[in-house]
Structure formats: structure tokens, C-alpha cells
Picture 1 (cartoon, rainbow, N blue to C red):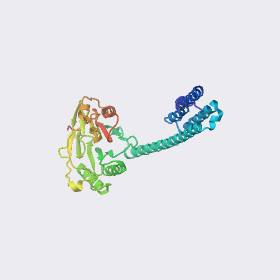
Picture 2: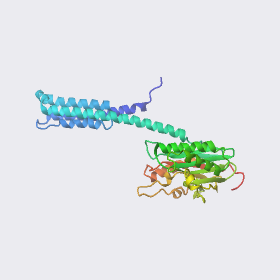
Picture 3: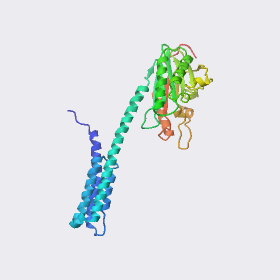
Picture 4: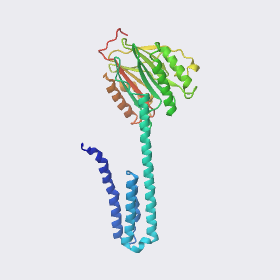
Length: 369
């Protein structure tokens, strides 16, 4: 049998070392109370031992320390005068220690139950995220790809932000979106849009027909028809051409980073968010931009640009990207994530999705853009 890893014993050893602190406190208070003049009563200080233990230990350890505190109070009464053990003063102190000890044990038990439930919730949410938003493969045809999802809440690792990619016969189709609202309804609407995109991206040869189909699908089945909507950017990136087609539906525009200089690709004819087509009667027009070999393409949701620092200043996206000359999407997103969280003080107010794509310099397109 292989030896047990020493790291697994460290928490146990650390716990035993911490237990010595309240035990030493009980011993010290008991000894000092016996030695000081009779008019001084230090027994009430024993309650600090189980209270301190409850800050880090479980219900069993807290119960043990509380029992030792009760024994310490009894030892004080016995060593001072055995007859005082039944006095109203010591009986009151013993009762108070027992009540406080039992309350702390109950508190720790409920805290552990809450921790187990929270662990289960995190596990379920992470499993749901892997099913709904699996990380994109590092390669999509000639493209190198990296994806990142940052949740605003630690307890819920998934929300209404979404992304997806589908390989077609001639290239790659991508979608990045953000559902209006929070909670499980937003997750359901995100799953609805991704399902429609994955089902139709290969069959709809024209980008405007694909977006019109997506709008019709989500408009029919959104959780709150007429009120809910989804902002989205849908892109078609051919394998043999550096001209990228896109339709932006109320979503933040992509950013192309070339030679350390970022350029925001604004859509001259943006469409309304998906789900509002019946009200807005959109005319989906395809816009295009150039993604040359060696360029980095960044797609994101508004959780990025709406991240604020302590002074309430929004994250200056293009300013913070200026000067980045690398072409590795993974290294770029890692740097981007650290810089974004540093600006926001380590915590975002809204979920954020980031996709980085690069066309390798060796993969020359068939014709210039």
C-alpha cells in the first residue's frame, strides 16, 4: 500500500493544535480562580472557550470543549468549598455554561449543514455550466480559441451569459449573448438560444436567415414573452477568407487587436436584441470586418465593460488592451482576466463572458480582405 500523503494530515494536526488554545484557557481560568481571593469569581470567563472554538471547529469539538468548561466550573466550586457546588451562584453559572454550550453545538451543526448544501449547489451549478457552456476546443478549424466565464456570485457559477461555436463546411460560426434578467429563468433562456443556434447554424447558409430564425425561436419560447430579450453577436468566420461577417443584436461590439492597437468593430446597422423582432420588425443586415493572420478577436458581454473600480469608473476596455502584442488566446485571456478583476477589486457586479480567437499567421487566407 502506498504511503498516505502527508498533506492530508495537516488539517487534522492544525485542528488539534487549535484545540489546545481553549483547553489551556479552561485550565488557566480554573487554576487562577481557585488561587485568587474568594470574593473574585473568574468562572464566567470559561464561556469564552466554547465560543472561541465555535469560530473554527465542528459541533463535536465544540461540545467537548463546552463539557470541559462545565467540568472546570464544577472543579472551581469543589476546590473552593465542596458545599458551594450546590449553591445558587455556581448552579446558575453551570446552567449558563450548559445552555451556551448546547446553543453553540446547534449553531455549528447548522453551519456545517449549510456548508454541505452550498458545496452541493456549487457542484450542481458547475455541472450545469459544463453542460450548457462547455469550454470551446482550443482549435476550431484554423482558428485558435480560448473561452472564459466569470460569475459575479460565488454560490452560483452560471447565469444568463452565453457563448457557442459550430463548425460548418466552410468555416466557424460563433455566438455571444446576454439574457436580460437573473436566476434560473435567465439560464433557461440562454439554453433555449444556444439550442436553436446549434440546431440551425449548419443548416442556415445565410447569416441573416440564421439570426431571423434565432429571433423567431426565442420570441416564441422565452420565459417572459414581450419582456425578456437577449442581446447577441453572431459571427461567421470563413476558413479561407479573412473577411468576417457579423450581425450585432444590441450587444457590445467585438474588438480586433492588431499589432498592439485595439479597434472596436461597430456595426453600422445594428439590429435590436433577439426576442423583440415582432415589436421592432428588424431588417437583419450583414456587416463585415477584416481578421488578418496574427490578429486577435475579442468577444465579450457587458459584464466586462460595466465592471467598476472603487471610484465607480467603468473598465476602459480598449485602453487596457493597448500594447498587447501576443497572439496566444489563452495567454491573452489570462492577462485580461487578472487585469479586469484587479480593476473591479476582485469581484464583478455582473457575470462576464470572454472569447478570444486568433488566426495563425501561417494560415494565409485564400484572398485578401
